[in-house]
Length: 215
Ligand SMILES: [Ca+2]
Image 1 (spheres, rainbow, N blue to C red):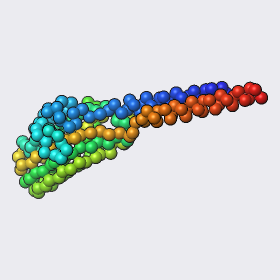
Image 2: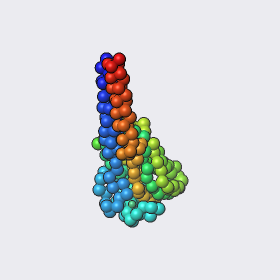
Image 3: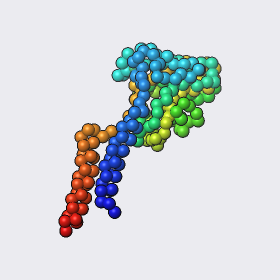
Image 4: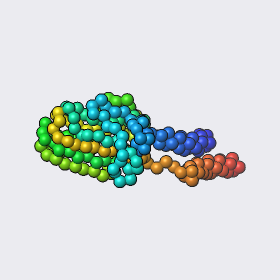
């Protein structure tokens, strides 16, 4: 066996790992804080689209996505974004404030679905908040969803609010600071360490080969 083959393959593997990790980190949310003052980067559904207004959420900056959580249902208010291939260990974080008076006709549900890029049947749907039929409720705060099960998938993220019946009570919804975080990408120092380790192994094996040849 050629002793040069294995260490060289390790060097290639280290480079490939770094390149892959860097490429995976490219899936990010566009305008997740809505600070452009509009819905740039987002895809609104046709039913009671959210709009951008002054943010009332802590740390929300100037703007957020917001709108009434009611309407001439049944329908689903949605705000989606195609974000690309998820890196290993990805999680989705956001701030929200949802409230409503639900006088009947079915539960109102705020959920986040993870679908194929461009749309389609969701891989999964995370329920975040539910107002039962005939009740009222409110909920807010930063939330984080674990997307690690979808690493390597090319995905769309969609925030969805169901309105199960026509005009059954006022409600409101606000969304801000949508971010996608992933497992740490190696820092330059770590790049050097990985490369240095691979080159060290390469030198060690070459040295052994020389000893063998000299012996
Ligand atoms: Ca904002």
